[in-house]
Image (tube, rainbow, N blue to C red; front, side, top):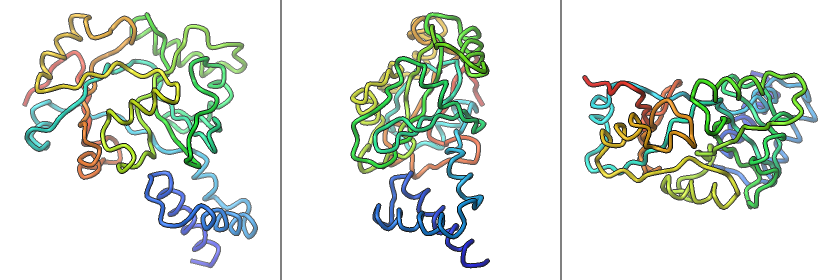
Length: 261
């Protein structure tokens, strides 16, 4: 590996650490590293990797009991509607909306600027903030919601995003130290002006919550959903459990069928 590739590897390492809230060098040191690589190799492929956006994982949907067996006893959960729309990530740089992309990494920045309830700017001291959520159509059935959101993103020159909303539910690069629980994440998203899915702190009644959703009583009208999402409340435990290349081990989607072992 030549010196430029070594520099690119170092840049990518620190860029990913920074976005994960685990920075090992100062902002100035990182900026100098980036500028040096841009000076030596302005078209290096590593820049395309960074700009393509963080990969958006799916949710696991294995049998509930199998999932719970891997979770420590007395763990607290939260439950949210599994909104049916299109998954999106937003990147804010120095507080300003700079990029939006889909699960496939497709850039949708200009279209997303048309969605009225996506803040154009947020107040933060962080250089980069990345937020995940769902573009959806409120008060529609799940299939319609997904179809309308996907259709809007496919249009070449949409004039507006009428009938569509965005619900945020994750700070992709939020550190555990700053946001120790999912409750802290939701509170910060609210402070920044994002709509977010209704969140219940679940105390051992997952089956009951799923039945509420099946009966249309889990905010099904406001948030068109194809199930519920269960997440571990403690983000430190989330970090310990980790993720595969496909889905996190600390969250589960429960759809129409309550899967058992």
